[in-house]
Length: 321
Image 1: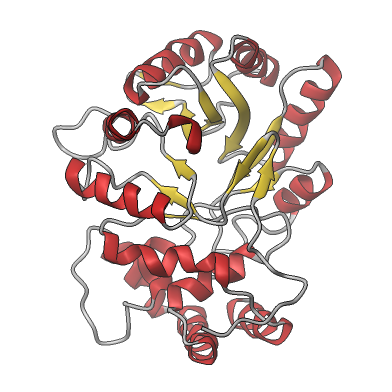
Image 2: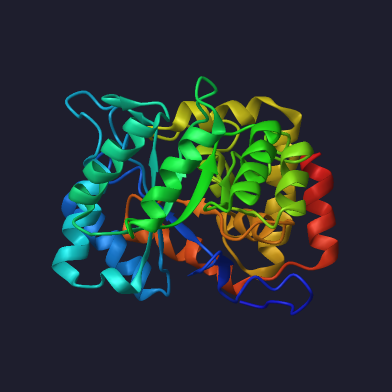
């Protein structure tokens, strides 16, 4: 694979506060859902063998599956960490606020939820703890004080936010700074080549001004940006409906054409190029992508080795505008 070295090189580890993370975060939403424990272990082993160290999950994964109650992904990851004895080698991110039994961000909910996550993960600390969805019924001071208590107690190393408005993010950062409390070091927005307005603009500006790193989810748009969905083809996947809808838009088709052009130039997978575009965006530390099988991993891990030229980034920017 040919890569050009330039100002956008995404190879080196990125910092999230005190944490050092690899260029690709492995999404854990599939563990205990479309990947059973054995398949999940194989994916986790291959991800770490490929140089990855940043695993993303949430206490709610995968409560949406009939028969599941939430916490299945954390349980799989906890069993894997214990069987491999590698807890100190990986950065574990999980989230609070969406579990069916522990919804919202009251101090009491956060304190109960973190202990349940620690039990399932079979560890005594969480590296990065996200508020999963903002809870506007709770003052930022209440949940930030609760999160700061967890940091002081050694249960959490760094804190972060997902699904939060620019206004509430600004308010949260100001409160932490004013009160000397733990401060959000990362933000997990919905962001990809066919969903730019979910992050770009005011939210991205707040992140940039305050040195908050972005760790985008839906980085591959539910699989659309892998290139496997094409006009006239049917793909059997748990998420195919969400992905295929982009085929009905001019932007979706423009983006696919641009991705094909860049992928051909580098002899790279379409998914790798889509992730490399994200990795080169201002504020982005590491996109999140999940793999149900070991075979899906190489294209994701290759983001750390692919640097796009300015012309290629411009092509993708214009196609996705």
